[in-house]
Image 1 (cartoon, rainbow, N blue to C red):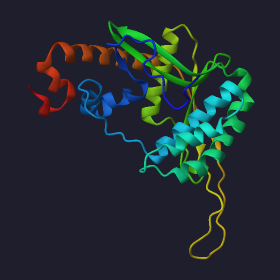
Image 2: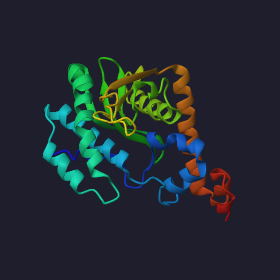
Image 3: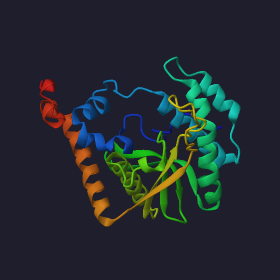
Image 4: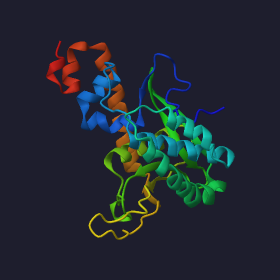
Length: 265
């Protein structure tokens, strides 16, 4: 039985493999020292689970459940929410999950179910000995040659939805496309499926009058996979792989690779 609340991040990889994660690849460029510290030195990540991230986990779980069974196991989701720690606002997750999951299912998954090929697909490709580019897709379509990725967002209105791929998502999704192409799949498009939070039933504190309702909405943002984008990703993947090899074999260069003099031996 699927565990819908965990990500299959290391399936089928050797125990000593190094994984280049699509979700982390932009950090190699933007927060280089942190990337090396968390990916190679085993230091704790600055990321902490939050109400927003747990809401995203539950939204992904509901989407995967529906993809597999055409139903959502609401008791299982509620049990997961109930077990969350005290720092998570469970009331927000409970209130938002129903409108957001129904929006995602009714506006995107159900209408496209016949052409969606596979959900939560783990993919990997060995870039260099023992070094793999690997991650888990949300869902993809062989028919449309498209990878889809669900993103929850707390916008009050559609004007705040990005009009182009954010930098980190661009690298993430282009790497997924690169891996899929290396595995023999044709991927020509990448689509972010933004699901907004529901903001309804609000009342103005000043006037006491009802404010405009903003129900959950799905907004699709698509980017092409081009020879130019794949050349960039391929070069970056090999740059990371060779940097990892140098980091492991030559400790005296680590501070240079990390761009962090604190780590000079």
